[in-house]
Length: 397
Ligand SMILES: *Cc1c(COP(=O)(O)O)cnc(C)c1O
Image (cartoon, rainbow, N blue to C red):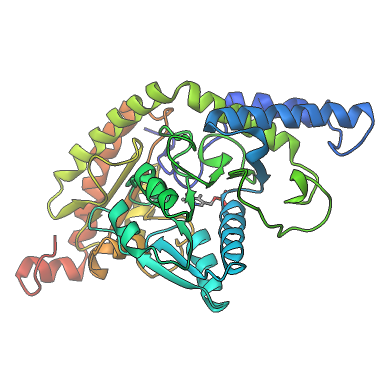
């Protein structure tokens, strides 16, 4: 197999034909500035508002609750800071989150701790889940915000968002969810799921990079962090990325229109990988086996380094990840795998394979054939594996 097998779709996806075609008219034809009063600008404005309506329909929201941003990270930052400062204005400076969020959330929370907020990080269980009861027990009279991700980007576990949202609503606490890995991949509806604020990112569902959405329920005041013009109802200044926004709307609608069939395709391929790779001795599937994104596989193999595994797989045309793209390059094991309770030694030997509907069953068989060979080779040259085999240190998985 000479061609590249790309199984790192949780890091980013290729743009779909639908998304590329939807972008083209705005690069040259409909190039106006939506804030201009003349007809060229107003034409652009019209298309911007159509895209807002499409995104709103896909989420079960109203168009005036949709704010376009530069991506998931910006949406997370704006949502969390807005809710935190809204709370602080009423004397509420407590926030609840989990210990396995994306860094866009965790680093924002760390900054807020430096500003005098107190954050409770709920510990996820060994499968990467928390319960609504855990959230309810942590809520205090001064809790301003609960922020919990819809689905984890590394281990694919899907949190009970609807139940967490219901708990937050009954205690009148604002609920934000980073749904970047969920939207376009599993059903998400802001009404049905009791969500007050939600972040999404186009490049995780075959749209363009650098564009995303913050959904903010109409009764929640959104704060402005990028000052300038009156775009996005004064909440986010800057000339709109019209081509990106219209392309994102088309990609999202396409994903939602084909959601059931895409999920079934991904699940079939995912399960081939899980079954095939689980036969490697001293391996372990990370994340919940069932409450799991249809396209996520995350495994640990004892006695090897994830980075070496990735490089050797890359040489065979397989593009995967050891965890999140954001932490790659650092030698620390993933905070997500540590949150699941894996020992450092085991967390180092991780492999994440994240699929999209364009992957093929043939590719899955190729991966199942090649990964065991590479693991076996790396173990044959690993001093740690030698100690494990001689019984000089205990197997942990
Ligand atoms: C990718 C990702 C983000 C960041 O989105 P960008 O658009 O790349 O800024 C945030 N949260 C999660 C869970 C992600 O997977």
